[in-house]
Length: 242
Length: 134
Image (cartoon, rainbow over all chains, first blue to last red; front, top):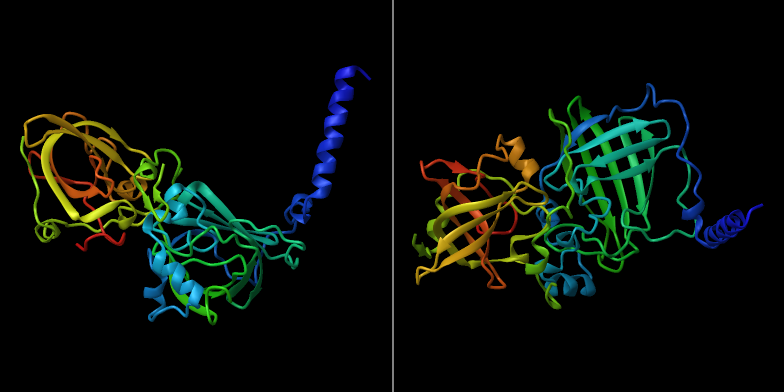
């Protein structure tokens, strides 16, 4: 073996050890290689959009059941603190009720959502796997789901507290547990019911329902960092952003 | 060219079409609804880019000195779905622009109404961003 190959082998071994020390997220099996969904489950494929809902309290219809901490965080936040203003990710659910459409693709054992906003995606595994053990905390969390009748029931945990639930500034901790029910209510409509359960920020689980409507146009590219000139003008609770 | 400041209520009467202008942050994150501005000027450049269309306008301040405003409009994808194109507004266009200045006092504004010399409006916006209501 030539010296260069020894170096390469040593680097490869180092990289392998690094992965071995990481959580299960670093060694996840490949996505399911199962047959297509076939009949018997609702067809969610298509491009959809929900009504833009910058303030979930409006959809909830009454004040959110905030804990003392949750109320304090909401009271003291400034709009300039919004992580998405700095093009940080939306988290798993805010992208749904943003003013941008998204594409749903169902494949064997998995439902994929391609969000126009931020040109990002989310996957809900429907192959029966449990949540990841020793879960890393990530922006979009870990989503698993199951079909039942005309609905998909999804369960998401491990969501970073860095995302906000909406533009109005409702926040959460990394103990947030999101459950969603997607119900096909017609050929061109899906009812989305989301429940937020976070004992740090909310005194009880609370839910809102919004309707997805099928769109006649494809999703487009939306790269938030392309020309985000707003950043230097934001007034944050730590002063003017740089 | 003359710059004037109008009351917010007068501006509110001029908004026609509702497009969420500030999809990725709230109005209050950056702009001051108590600082309405209106001026005539000439477009020098347009950035048809995400997350917001920006266009730049030369106008004259009270002393007649030319100043350069950066004006934020809606999201290009949302505007495109409403039929607007990247050449709907272009360098050299004389416009009247109404909106609200940034809280940091720079010559940056959220444009809520843009009127061309022939009276037609482009990129009409906006609502649902926590800004002054239409």
